[in-house]
Image (cartoon, rainbow over all chains, first blue to last red; front, top):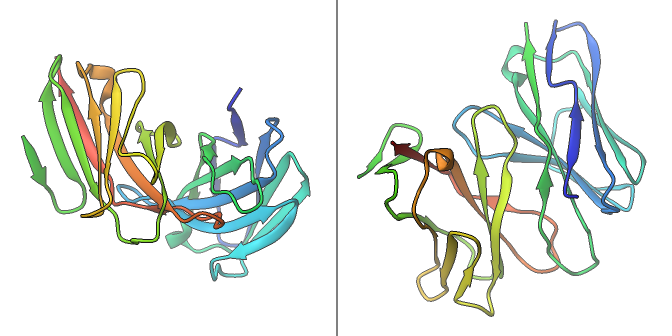
Length: 115
Length: 112
């Protein structure tokens, strides 16, 4: 099973709202990722968690706050977003073997619209 | 035929044709390469990967070719079907690093 699930599928929020995106995998993967994807563009890496610790933050604004409660779950907390943050947010996971680059498996994404 | 639009190169083929999607990668130190398929409104789906110790790898109806000399990667799809219509991304990575660098993507349109 190579399934990564994401909820919600769609989210519409105002600029003053606080919301969270959720991601879950049960493949025993130890690396999890958040990406942002604009239309007709490739995914852009935002954050990487390795063994539940934040290992990479690609200079993402603080209005995006990631959290990894356990090895299967990854959240992205959203606060005071801007309309230009509207995009498809993708979660991915990989086995995360130390020193080894391996396949990332993506979830279906959350389509976020900021009004 | 292939055209380069304002944002996304597009390859248009007829059902049953063989398709070849090309990708030029940027980092000569990259040693792991992946092809993803992304259908409209969905997340990228893993198709096939290849490591730099190989020149060719075959899957079901798909073949990936790697030319390290010119930093070129290609995805061949045999007997293309309408269900193959999607955007295809190549991605590269360097061993020991967890990050992928994605190419710009190619849209494949398959006509019945």
